[in-house]
Image (cartoon, rainbow, N blue to C red; front, side, top):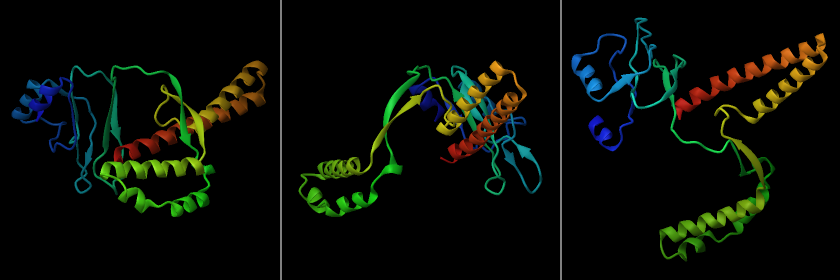
Length: 225
């Protein structure tokens, strides 16, 4: 499998439960496979926890070729009631750049008129849209276009700014609280008063806690996906 992969691309990432403890001496044939294919393990913490014996092992390595620029890697703790393995992740530099910000139109679902949408769905002759089509592809297109037309009449859209430099867990609420922290910091710098300092530090601590909660929530969800 590695040979077939390397025939397609020199940049290889191999990960998962390999059932070999990378915290102990590996069999020579396993070491030879990694050496011949230029793979190195970048995870250095235990990932498997035997609740019966209390022993730990590294069964879930991330093996990469040395041509891959690794930016970050670590393990993700899981509840032992869910799994006796921790998750792992790696962040790499993909070698492409994007605009720092751009605008995008999204559905504003909270302001949708769903009673009107239900009415339009009931009034639409879906059977005719499908039966009148020449083949399944035309039928799918007719259905999709009709449904999107109904949605556009009943659900408004709004423009949002996508910031490419933001972390994936950095949401709009965290951005608002960060801006509030920055405003309070500027007020404290100008006034240098004790009350301004207290407000700034309270907001700073709030932002730090929100960041920790966002990371803690996002990473396990990402691993489940």
